[in-house]
Image 1 (cartoon, rainbow, N blue to C red):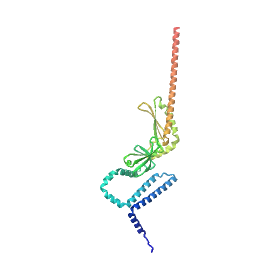
Image 2: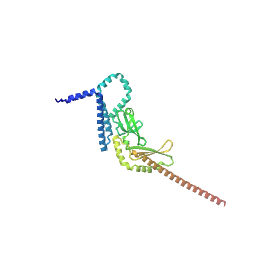
Image 3: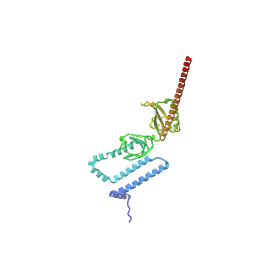
Image 4: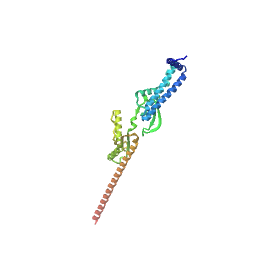
Length: 315
C-alpha cells in the first residue's frame, strides 16, 4: 500500500519539526541564507566589474537588508521565547534602554541616513574635522578612508564614525571636490617692489597654466552649479594684492582646478611670481645704481668745474 503525503500535511510537519528543534533550524537557516546572500552579492559584483560600473552603494544596501532579513527570520523562529523573555525583563526595560542608548542612537542615525540620504557609499564627506571617502556603512558605524584636507590625497587610514554623529554633528558632502576644487593660496613679500606693475604679466602666466584643462573645468563648473542652483565659480584665476598687519605685500590667488594638480599649479605660480619679483628687484637696483652713478659723475663734474673756477680766480 502506497502512502501519499499531501503538501499541506508535509508543510505542517516541517513547521512542527522546526518549532521542536529550533536550534538546529536556526543553524540551517543562518547557513542557507548566508550563502544565498553571498552568492547574490558575488553575482552583482561580477556583473558590475564586467560593465565597469560602481555598484558599491547598492551592494552595501543589499548586504544590510540581507542581514536584517536573517535577523527577522530568527526572531520568527524564536518568537515565543522572545515574547517570554520580553515579559520577564519588563521591569528592567528602563535600565536596558539606558545601558544601550549609544547603540539605539547609532541605529536611529542609520534610520535618519536611510530617510535623508545625505551621502552614499563612494562619496567624500566631512564629519567634524575628518574628511574621507565612505567605503562602508551599517546600522552602527560609517567607515571612512581618510583624506588629507591639505593635499586631498588618501592617507591610508580607516576612520570608523558612530552613526549617532549623523544626527548630532554637521555632515558636509564634498563629493564635487573629488575631481575639481576651489583652491586658493597666498604669497607674502617685502614691499620693495610695486606689486601692481607685475600683475598683468603674472595673470597672463597663471592663465597659461590653467588653459589646458579649461574645457573640462567649464563642463564640471556647469554640472556643480546646476546641482547647487547657484553660480559662484570662475574659471579664470583671480589675483588679489593686499597688505597684512605687518605691512607685507600679500598676493592671494584663487583658481578652479583639478584636485590632484592643485599643489603643482600652486608651485608653478609661486615660481612665476618670485621670478617676476626678483627680476623687478634687479631692474630697480640696476636703475638705482645707474642713477647713483650719474649723480656721482655730476657731482664730480661740479667739483672739477668749481676747482677750475677757483684756480682761474687765483691766477
